[in-house]
Structures are given as structure tokens and as C-alpha cells.
Length: 538
Image (cartoon, rainbow, N blue to C red; front, side, top):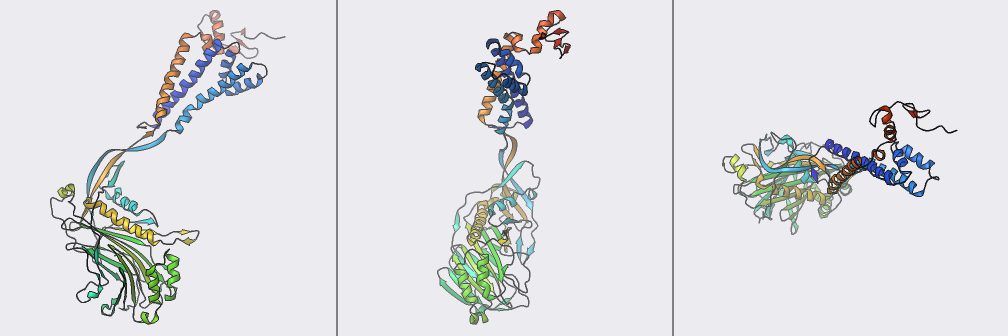
């Protein structure tokens, strides 16, 4: 049971609970002392001396008192312990808790600085780093509901980007690889049928010779492309480029900032694997989503391609095997600088790309692309009202929404292998999460305004207390209070009071006072108001 009580309130209640329990033990002993025989009062008075006195009395009297008296003494010790520790036991079952209340939703509109790099517009500040294998969707949610991105944020309020069910309107895309001028080079159209078009290419800083390319369709969905380049002086990291479009909108991903120049490639990972996402709305209300994961690596020599690949990735699949054969073919490599192995399935592309222009070894990357087209959805009415009914903005070029780097750790000095299936799943999950945001996450690129609908709840702090404790403690307190009051009201004070009170009652008439009262006393010999309490034994 959740209660909005403070710890102080609970501690006060438990203190009263313990106080009444201890009082109830005294009341029970008062009844016992009235009817329990000649040892009963001694047991009750011994308890008032504390645990050491009770235990010493039990030890010293073990052989001289009846079994029933010993049993009563043991029960008194045990009951006293239970009464003193019961509140601590109850605390064990009480935990701090929070609950969400006042569920509602809110629209947040923020101005976005949109820098342009290589013709690509991207949201600034929407990047993060996650451990390899971590939940990429969780990272994306944290980016969106980061309170730093929410103006006039309310403390103790949870902001969750609103998602909705969606229906995929297209699961087949036409694919154009490496070259966009399909009029002059139609051979780069690998697949011509589809309700959206994906243009896939790479940037390596060299000039490609498209007319001299060799394109082989190895099987359904499997392609190999070899193409010469005019090499530049300095080789650079491969940057895959993916542009997804229909008749009105283009989305881009693969434009990663920070790729440096490499003069001499080494064996291993060139930079952290990363996932780029892009989302846009067409003029007809359809949503285009693109997710691209890139894993760049290099080899010091061509011959080390297999060993390096196996040391980095957990699966040496058919793309790697085909690439190994191509790059180790000296005759083929002499006239070719760029090698691409592609696997296309519905709206997914996996590509392994390597080039050797001006290098002793290879620059490579393994890229996974996932594209989604969501059926037409109406713009969220709250966002539509905030935009004053303006028509949907048209993306005039590639855009990037989020960037997520995957940190690959070392375990016992050995770097983790990168699982291609894990990275593929991350790519898919990122795309489908963006699709689930639908029109609730809308970027007006022309106005540099981002509109997000959040589900909001307020956090209420309190305590989680089991129902049985909530039931037992009040009932026990009522019983203990009733028992204690009854004994104090209806029993003779000689059975409810201490030994000191009993002595005071005997001396009250002599002192012309009412018992109990404070009296002068001596310990040796034991006397109160100069009256000996124990006769001297001779």
C-alpha cells in the first residue's frame, strides 16, 4: 500500500507502537502477579531492572524455583525482547517508494540550431554515447526527454516522448548504389521496383571512375561492385552515405563528423561504431525513417584482411568471404580501388566496403541500413495548432536527427568482438522507435523548430507499506492500550506498580502523603525514610 507519509511520521507511529507494546507486557505481568502465586511479583519487579537483572535472576534461581516460575521468567524475557524489537522488524518491510500521478500530456516547442555540413542538416546536441550492446532505444528516449532540451521544465515531473501504433506503408525500396547520375550510368540501379528509393554511396575523398565499374548480381539480393578511383595524396576514412526519398522528401544519414585522414592504416577499428537516424514527414503525411550503422576498420596489409576481420567481428559471413577473394586477387586489385559487397532484403541493406587507393593495406567499413515508410498520418492537432495551420515543411536535402556512438570495451585486456546481429538489431530498433514517434516528433526544418508531444506524470514520494502491517499495527495498538488502561483502572496499585511504589504505599500514612512519592533512602542498610526495609539477619 502506497502512502504519502514521511519517515518522521512512520517513526513516531512505530515509537508509540513500541511504547504500547511494552506497556501491554507490564499489564499482562500485573495480572500474572495478582493470580500467579508467590513468585509472580518478584518476576514483575525483576523485569523493571532490565535484561541483565532478569537473566541473572533466572540463572541464580534456576535450581530453587518451580518449573512454572522458570517458564514464566523465560517468557517474560522473550516477550520483553519482542516488544522492544517489534518496531525495528516492521521497518524492514517498509520501503521508500514513488508513484506517478496527474497523468497528462504536453507539447514542447524548441528552436533548434541546425548546422549544415556537406549539405546535410542535423539537429545540434542530439548525440550520445552508449556501451556496446546497450539498449539504443533507451538512449534515444533519454535524449528526447533530457530536461536540458525542455524549456520551463517542472522538477519532479517525468517526460516521456509519446509514441503510437503505426502501419508500415512500404517494405520494398528501389536501390541505387554509389552513383546518382543514373541517366549516364543506369547499371548502378540495383533494384528498380519499390515505393521509395534509397541512394547508397560512399565518400572516400577520391574521384570515382563510374564508367569503369564492374557490377555483378551474384544472387537474388546479393551484389558485388568494383570500381577504380583516381587516388588522392591522403586516404581518408570511408563515410557511407544513404539518402532515402520519395516524390517530395529526402532523408540522409551517414554523414558523420570527425572522420580524420589516415596516412598509414593500422590493424583494427578506425573509430567507434555509430548509428545515425533520420526522420521526416512527406507533404502527403507519410513518415520516412532511416537508420544507418557504420563500423569502420582498417588493415595494415591486404593479406591481413581475414585475420583483422575475425579479430573485430563475431561473424565472418559471405560478404567478408567475397571481399577476401576480391582484395587478394592481385590482377583484379591492380585496376580496382573500391570494392563493395551488398546484401539487399526488402528495406534493409548490409554492405561491406573496402578501398586500397594509395594504401599498403585497406580502409573498410561494414554498414547496415534500415529504411521505413509509415502510412499517412494526420499531423498531431496540438502541433498543427502551434504551427498555425501552416502546411508541412518540405525537406530539401538530407537531414540527420540523432547520432549514437557505441563504445566497445575491453574485458580482461581483450576487446569485445562486435556482433553483426547485435548491431543489426540496434539499427532496426532505432528505426522502429523513430517510426513509433510518428507525428508526435516533428521537425520543421524550414523554421528550425522542433515539436515534441510528451506524456507527463508528476512524481509523488512516499512509502510502500504492506497491507498486513497497516492492519496489524493499529489493531495491536488498540488492544495494548485497552489492556494497559484496564489494568491501571481496575487492579490494585500493588500489582501494577513497582516495588518502590509498594514501599511508598506502606509508608504513606506515616509520611502523611500519597503514594507514590519521592523518599529519602539508604542502600546499606536498606531503608526508606529511616525505616528499615529488610530486617538484619544474624
